[in-house]
Amino acid sequence: MPAVPGFKPSCGPTLPPDAPRIRTTAGIGTAGQKTWTLRRPVTVIGSGSHSTIVLTGPAVAKAHCAIINTAHAVLLKSLYPQSGTLCNGQPVDLVLLNDGDVIQIGEQRIQLAIQQAKGRNEKTAADVSFCDPFLAPQPVRLEQIGGADRWTVDSSVCLAGRHPAVPIHIDHPDVSLAHTVFFYFAGQPAFCDLGSRTGTWLNGQRQTMAFLNSGDQLCIGPVEMKVLCHDGDRALHDDPLAINAADLDHREAMLRERERRLDAREGVIAARSEELRRFEESLRIRERQLDARACRLEREPLPDKPAEPTGTPFFTGDVGSANVWSPPPEPTDDQPQPTGQGVDRAWGVFHLPAPPGDWADL
Image (tube, rainbow, N blue to C red; front, side, top):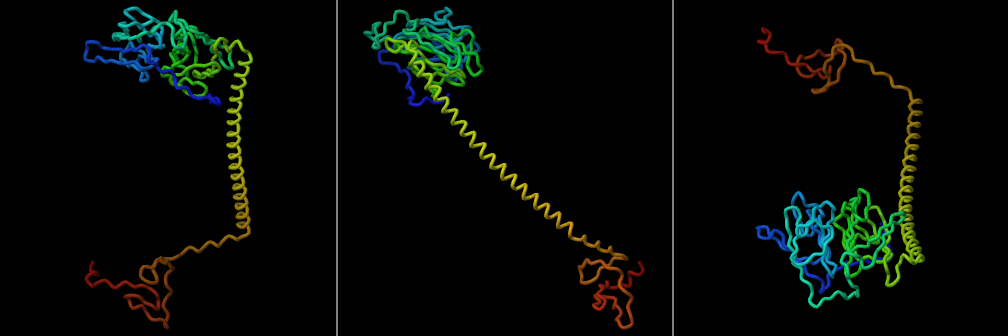
């Protein structure tokens, strides 16, 4: 997903001082007892490495459930319909947590201690009243870009993923079963990536947790969608001019990215064409050289075949010479006779010394 010009990455929601304080304890009364203080709006419990609270066991999924602190209330959301999340012994999908509640996953139990801020009332600093903790203060609509899918986030916690039972169902192998959870923090919509492989992208930037605003571009796997939510007293999706402007900005960004890729591809093609031209030129030069050599060989006569040596081979010349000649001519009267030992310089023949007399008897 290309980056949107002028977008500044969100720092994400952080718990205000007057938010509920949560402490969880697992394995109470055992040697493996462990306590966590939850300082994030979303705490994922599961067996995956991306989980905040990592539990082991055959009944624990990678992202099993999530504890969500909305800055006003504490909710427990099961991330799989069949994951088997129990609260005080009852199977739950979305439940409001109170001080002393016990979450059970398989054979493991987690006890919660929740402390509310003193002097807190239902009217928050954001001037939003919470009558029902399970309903969204203001619905958010997600519209697929280049497609016909539409989703509405009308609950305080909503799940997106590949699982067919989740409200925002995206059937694609690049989407995890439980990919992203949408929630409301201090009355403002936000999302949290659940440790997915491909991540959740907001306006071209990969984000773990961030707020959502009108006109944002959200990408989950290969699906790009536009966020439409209320802006003050007026909803963005009621303004067709705003929708057209957002579409035009997105299309302009996509066209610029496509133009950049085409320019890069043309550069690669031009470089490859130059290499091919040089290779063809070298082949032509080599072909001319071979033709010239063939013509030169046709004009030159073939060399005579050297005569093969005849007679009994023997060594002549100095010691160590390996020249092979035919037998020497017969000596004449005016030439000295061989001495029988050493080198006869007149004849140029090397004579071995005569063997001892006692060798003649052998």
